[in-house]
Image 1 (cartoon, one colour):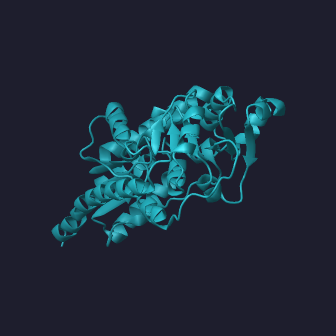
Image 2: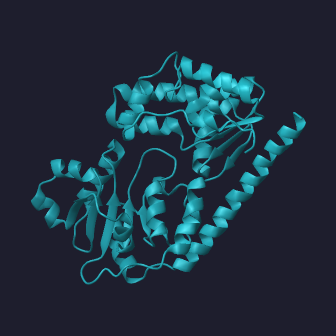
Image 3: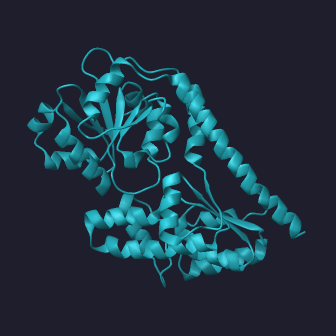
Length: 342
């Protein structure tokens, strides 16, 4: 990147997981600045702009809107890589939690709007995210769809040697989830619709603790649902499962857990809302839109006829090539900008 200030997007965020981490982030607000970016951080950032005199600055979150505005005023080109539509994330949390999440929604809306206003180019992970940002904030100066999460998938698929034998028994579906509110909601809905008559369901991660509080052990056992907690090798679990199920209904962005599934040759059954960014794998059958009632039946079908791994590799390479070409075109502006500034 040459003289691009990369420090702009390494402002440290608090530790932790899910909304708890974001709450600690917002507790550091001063005058409405978001993502732990307070007056002191802004001052340090402006000193770096003066010292490095960058032609462009790259941010990896829409929550850095206050910094993006200052980079713009400094005469820099501004590039923002969004991770989702932050408004949609907090709207989902506000709907499920209420209380503080409503105030976080307001703060995220203000910061994300500043990022869109100040950026020369906004990158979104999917066409749906682009659509939502335009709905909320108006048309950016330039908006490109680039999903950097897909780029490692090509390499992982090239190393993948094939699915692991599952052995005899019922087909297996896996649900991966933290204890976040949206995962809890999805896991509860899925559990209520899972019968166990056609396939086994393995629930991996913290979300299983929540299910244990909501359902009796006998009920889970009768539905052939196993709460696995943390597993020694997620790759092995996915490579030996017939499907990963992802019934997420709120928010935007892309579901990273689907990258892990595809990298291990595990097809994904998901709600329509969870498939944004993975449209390239729909025609081949590696990702499929399913209702909660259909997921168990389709898991059984996939156990009998899995889709073509070579087709997934080819489609992924083709999709990644499009995103890389977009990046080359956009970032060629950096060279032009440096030359213009001498």
